[in-house]
Amino acid sequence: MASAERNSYLDQVVAQSAQLEQDLRVKKAPMAPAPAAGGGDTSNRARRSAAEAATTPPTAVDVRVTGFGPWKTVLVPPNAFVVHTRRGRDKPLHLGLGTSFRYRSATDSYLVVPGTMQTILLNAFCICRELQGVLVQAYVQWIVQDIATAYRKLDFGDASDPMRLVNLQLKEQAEAAIKDKVATMSVHEVLSDKQPIIEELTARLRGVAEGAGDSDTGLGLRIVTVQIKEAVVTSARLWENLQKPFRSEQGQLARLAELGAQEIITGRELASQRLDQLQRLENDRELADLKARNAAGAFDRDAAERLRRGEREQADARALASQASETTLHELQLEQQRHAQETEMRRLRLELEQTLQRLTLDHELAVARDRAEQLHAAALLELERDRVGQDIANGRSPEAVQAELIARLPEIVAKLPKPNELRTVNLSGADGGSLSGIVAELAAAVTAIRSAVSSRE
Image 1 (cartoon, rainbow, N blue to C red):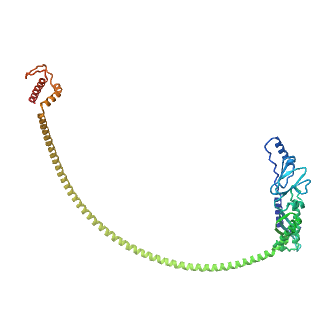
Image 2 (cartoon, rainbow, N blue to C red; image 1 turned 135 degrees about the vertical axis):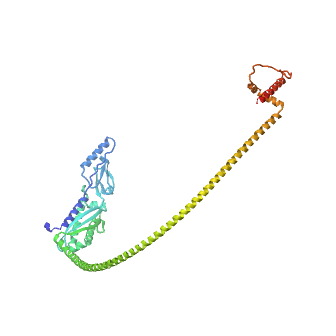
Image 3 (tube, rainbow, N blue to C red; image 1 turned 45 degrees about the vertical axis):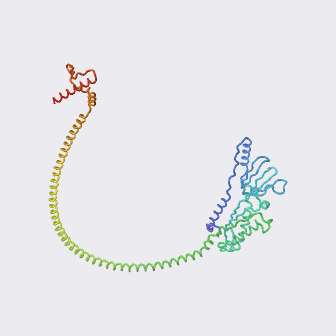
């Protein structure tokens, strides 16, 4: 088919399918066993294991073989089926999911099959009932249900991709079923309803993989789901012709809707223009009336304002004259009140000064009287004190006088003038050596001194 006749959408669908299939086939790199810490034997075993891993081709399942010689152990991941057989045994020693086991390289053999769900992408180029090319794109997902049946009937011998042959066989059967079903359908049926193709493909694959009721007839597999992703006509011209009726119908509906909308819009525009003109005229008329009313109102306001201003000016003039007269009268009253207050203040000041003078004189008289009374009282007290002292002196006994005289004798002697000469006169004839004689002499001397002092004063 020429490139001009090929559908470009078909190329996009095929390219996307190829990319998806490539993504599903990406494998992880095998992991080398980590070297264990220890002696030289452990290091040698680790190096031998690394060398074996380097020479062994990559596998689809991450199976690790540990140990050496007859003490090897096969470690199987938990999502993989294992079949372990030994020479001389008609049945497998280990058969199940994720089962690890001891392995003897001389007598044992094992098969590891992924237990995860597998996806098959289908691109079936079919011929429909009208002898037109149609690409049906689908996918099938399946898993291993019974490993005991599957390993006997299917080939999982490819270590790098154990599911390759099984996927290829299922893919061929699925494409054949799709082509058989599409050959009985028209192009419109294929493009509009894909459920008959899904039912036919599911029935055929389940009959092959799971068997028709008897487990021995099946392959030990289970079909999880079957889906049709896309159905595309390979001819670009046919694809365009199939789309033309719908496009023409939709174009007609769109054009009719556009014309109807244009008619409605035109009518509304005319009505809107007429309404706009009517509103403009009405607005002009209302605006003229409003301007006239505003001019009349402005004239009335100006006249009223002039009248109000004239009346206000006259009233203000009268109010000012009345206020000036009242102010003058008030000033005269204030002046009279001020004179009266000044006269009253002068009178009060004179009365206050007279009262102060009178109070000052009264105070001075009272002070003089109090001073005279105090001096008189002091003189009376002094006289009374002298009298009392004289009475006390006169009332003392001779013994008290003599004792006081004896006590004050040193003071008296100290105050006496120093005699130029000493004369002794015995007037009483008493013995001057006795105490009574001495006291008598002293008394006589004191009396003489008092007499001399009194005569001097």
